[in-house]
Length: 254
Image (cartoon, rainbow, N blue to C red):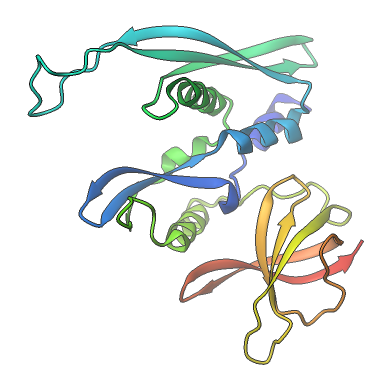
């Protein structure tokens, strides 16, 4: 694989199922949400593109700093505990040069699970240097409704915003390189009958690239059972009053 193709595959947008949202600011019952890619999704992307044996990480203690008192806080009573940070070196093996190429970035430890959070954030930042998830910097933060625990009240709204923004940017999510032979694995079915479609159901799939994906099936084609593998799956995005979703429109049993 040449450098151009490697860069293209690493930088492909992720499907909505791999995108999570972090609330960065709160105003009454609204929160300002920003999208991010999980460490697990980045690991799977690296495994799929370069293989599990051709990427590696190393972590290095970086610097420490003492946080400044917040507005209105008494400086003498402020917490002066130094906050450490981590550097992550993410290396990919270059077969042509027969050497490891490393890119490094860092992040401060987080308030929750501080060391683990710092390692995870520095890994994500290093991945961006390779192009993984970099397109998310083109997204504006979005105000969304939150509940009393500061959790996102309507995730479907953000999913719809994400997919619409991708279209506006002229981007599409990563697809399997061989759609004719690649298989989706059914790992769960939840009956969801609707008018005129008594066999309709929500289907939990594992995509050919190892991603989890939930789709809706009207149940008009027989043979859809737990554990089956699907070839030539046609999955289309639909919009409804409750937001966007994916429909399993057609398939062949493997």
